[in-house]
Length: 213
Ligand code: GRF
Image (cartoon, rainbow, N blue to C red; front, side, top):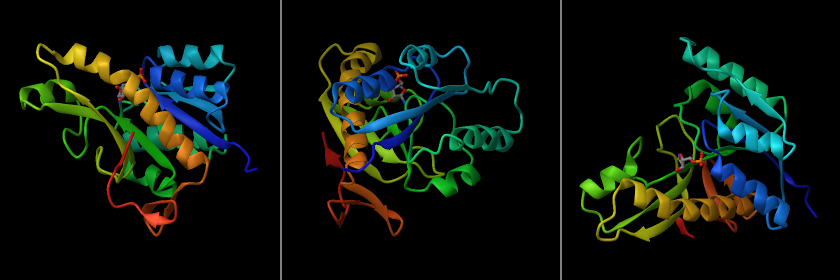
């Protein structure tokens, strides 16, 4: 039996993806230990969820911090002190400095509410609707210095329905995000997904196409 994967979760707000990880871990389907939850916003609801679950928290207010690189270095030093094996960005709404990411290559993932490479950045639901897409979804990708640009590990699709607006689309996608993120963290925790030679491998073979959840 391998020891549970030590996971740090970075959030900026609601923390429903964090809550899904906590629930899966408690339910016995996710062999992880969430060692810390960190936020750039001290008022993030997700920090309260972490505290309620007895998880250590770091609240490092980014407001008024002009030196982005120095802020990122401080945040990552605080997180690294908990010795995570994996950092999960779950609604963490900041672009991270390349220098802090470099040592974590292959050990940091992000959940993004679009079918990457479509719609990196913000307002993904609105942009999918404006483009007339009939299929929308969410992706989990390894984080590189390029915004929402690292290798996509897996995605989950939903149909766009007549009458959808950005809010209905987001609401219907959210439970799929939760399942997708939990599944990806599970694969990493079980050692099925590993980072080798600068790219993800699944069950021993280089990942060519994003997996479907
Ligand atoms: C999710 O839609 C996630 O994909 C995006 O931000 C949202 C965070 O939601 N990056 P929550 O904080 O996990 O509830």
